[in-house]
Amino acid sequence: MRRALREAQKADLQGEVPVGAVVVQDEKVIARGHNRPLALLDPSAHAEILALRRAAKKLGNYRLKGCDLYVTIEPCAMCAGAIIQARLRRVVYGAPDPKAGACGSALDVLNHPKVNHQVEVVSGVLAEKCARILRDFFRQRRKTGVRGQGLGAGGWGLGAGGAGIRSQRKRSQPLAPSP
Ligand code: ZN
Figure 1 (cartoon, rainbow, N blue to C red):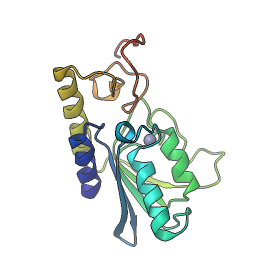
Figure 2: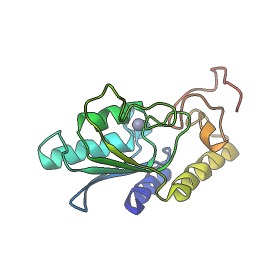
Figure 3: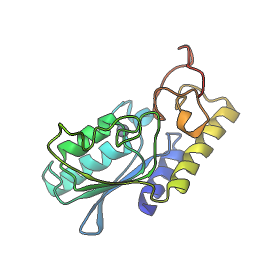
Figure 4: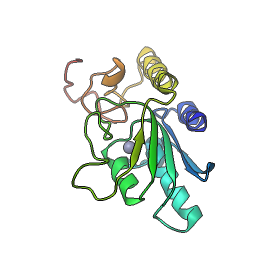
């Protein structure tokens, strides 16, 4: 998880929502990724997706059997879908995402009773550190008036809520009140 946190810091330095992920096989990190939707102009460029893509390239197989994913924040529905497609063995995440987490918080995509592949889920690993880097990021953004990213940081009590921490919603949309 410390390696995933280091990835999150890279995203932070690049002005991206600080989320990081690593794929581990046989206790070795085989791929890393940090959030890059802004830089890549790619809504799917979440840390998890980038790490899974790199791991699949490295292994020459999109099925990442026996691999584990460590990610600083609970994966969203898109990433949970990719985790199932990759047949990961285990997902370890830091902080929960009450607004968009798809591993039991907002949705339960992993281990949904109708999904064949079962993934072991471990939550709360270095959760406070993983959440703090996000909180600091959003606090800084609000202070400097940067708009258009991460406005849905409701889970950290900073944003307007509703669309998850990695939403790119514009201010022109009416926002739901904070819970
Ligand atoms: Zn995601």
